[in-house]
Length: 368
Image (cartoon, rainbow, N blue to C red):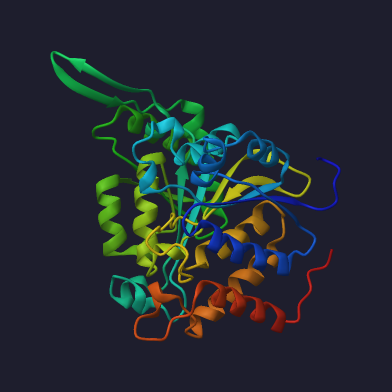
């Protein structure tokens, strides 16, 4: 594993539109990095159908051996009656936890010329370029759960737990991100109510002393949600805990015009022979209502592949080539149905074809 000369990418298309958009991401990544090898595995509902479990052992082994994971989406209403540990989403939580992928980087940008697709006025989203950094392996989603009868009443609880080192590493990651951008970090919590938020703010204030060049502000999560729709372009990097980050990043995605535009990278401390190990996925979910129709927006998946090139292949040039091709396509009005407005939309594969043509037309080769 450590001595191979070609990166190995585990491809987990999953359910719904996941395989469709992941296919386009793989095609684009292969165009800028023809040296990569791909191993395709089942996950989520597709794995349940074959093996009765959302994360089969062969998928676990392949992901452990790979240099990165290109992930689609998992889930579906047909699994709603299953226990939590047997639902498709358990695979996603399991991969994050087992590989300690604690830092979820979710960039949201307004694409040139597409500001009118946002649910906000174009002048509010013009210049939007932010990152929601979400802590991914602790908090409410991983706490103990109970479902009991107390005094004759059914009583259910979910426990939110954070340890100080977990807070420090994600906050420090946020300061490093902000230092490489516009040097502004917004830490989001609910310090007026939650004990975990009080720890979060104390640790953030302490870590801030190591980054005097980065401006720090604190916002309560309800105020942060309001400010995202009031003045979204003011934000640079937002760092927050698991549940808040899940919600705020979806809100940020819609500012760009569609949740189908939001990529993500889930990163940990592990380093391979090519870069930082990570899992890359669109935030858009399975969208079962359009699965199989060929109209899904692959932008988030393609941009997730760009993030894979940046972080797990240490290839900034390849990442920028992909991002610039997507920007050019959007500027030229090449958009899927969710972004097209009054213009004729293109399908999933057609959008991928356009990106490939733009990459070919650039007549660049990435030296190896």
